[in-house]
Length: 273
Image (cartoon, rainbow, N blue to C red; front, side, top):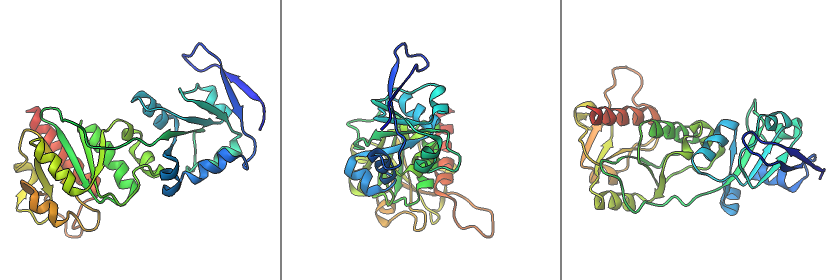
């Protein structure tokens, strides 16, 4: 371990004492590397946030940064609020980074409890995603959910860890602005029924087109797994099933994030008119 280095963050009148880490054998460096694995994230109850934009959006939405790691060049642009800050040489930072061209900022944050809310606002727009398995898809989905102003993202029986660094990166920080809950399909359906939310399931086999059919009022749009679509449980319990028309001759499905965006923005358009 080296000495300390004082920085004056932008907008902060107080100096910061920062610890310098020089060796890749430092236990903190090993822990950062292990946090790329879901098992270690679950064990420690923490996850990684990489990138100034992503860390900044986390802080802007009220998330706490436990530890902030960065290069001298990155920290010279200003620090973000955190419990502890650590200065890394450029070469060492490149080793802990998961990006090809890192911007020199990496943080750890506590994993929150993603439980169902006690209540929903009037006219709530909700997206339900069943058994998603690709981190990139989930990250892109989060961007669409946040942009459409959804009040809740319900992840039922997910097959990927939502705190995977690739999810955080693909969401471009939207993950920190979207209320999320994780539960089984049965619990989600019961919650939606109790709150008077109509359930619209998206499936290619539906007879009705989505742009002719989305109802008003509290609404939950349900999209399925990338390979298998929705399970019979959602199709059976939905108030309505809709499809997205496709005019091509080759593709038989859309990326789940694209399908969700189309459905969400149609619901949003109807609410604006």
